[in-house]
Length: 321
Figure 1 (cartoon, helix red, strand yellow):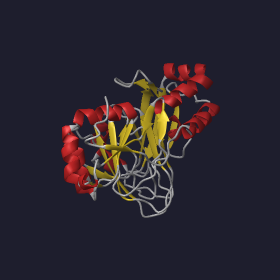
Figure 2 (cartoon, helix red, strand yellow):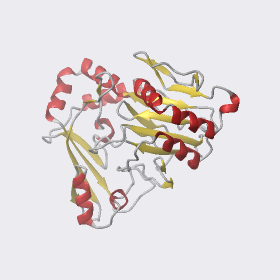
Figure 3 (tube, rainbow, N blue to C red):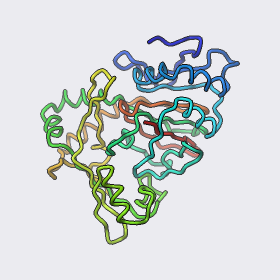
Figure 4 (cartoon, rainbow, N blue to C red):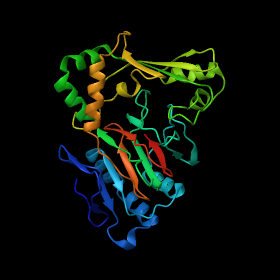
């Protein structure tokens, strides 16, 4: 499916890469300077919804740059132009609703690196699309790096073929510990009351069970959540049969508040985890924000993270089915 030049001009951006013949991210700009207003953009997106979604699946990341997107209201209008269903965020990151379907991205300290992940990778239903909008770009750092997930699987299979298949066969189990109330001093500081939308423990357990999660209550009022078994990789429709590295082993293994192990309780070899982390970094695309950018990520195909930055940095997010 070819790009229609009358609707968009194809551009370039810092850090852009061609991976297996696909440009990541595909950069779409106004075709003419007088068509950069949000109203014109939304009109074009409504006319090209199917085409745009195909471009997103083909390239895994699509960037709208050079359009006059000013705030959460404009961003929400862009999201609603596609008609994609909303999906409520479930996870450890502290977030605040800004406007309708728009939320803050992780409110943890900007000095911390948010590790690469597929959004809500451990929940039964993950968003297919993660869309980010930059209202205030940081003066230094703060990139949103992303990684073609299939490349991680390919390289891990090259280096650890037997171990990958053993982990796949046995499955994975994860644990995560959360306090009852939010702690915004941590990038994983969301309390269980906020995460499950209730302060009632029985109701929280019911809601956890519905998304495939067990809970153990702690003496301090916090909770240990247990998820598993979960797969190491997944193949999704429409993505060339690629085997995605759809897990969070590196991000949760051996951490103070989380763990990742085989589903039978045995440990994952340390060298396996360490080398996987190196490969993820080697395959990463370092995306640098400009004011007004709207970045669409195929959550089935890309891991993403956040580099440490100096303040201020304001990036908003919407998650869609």
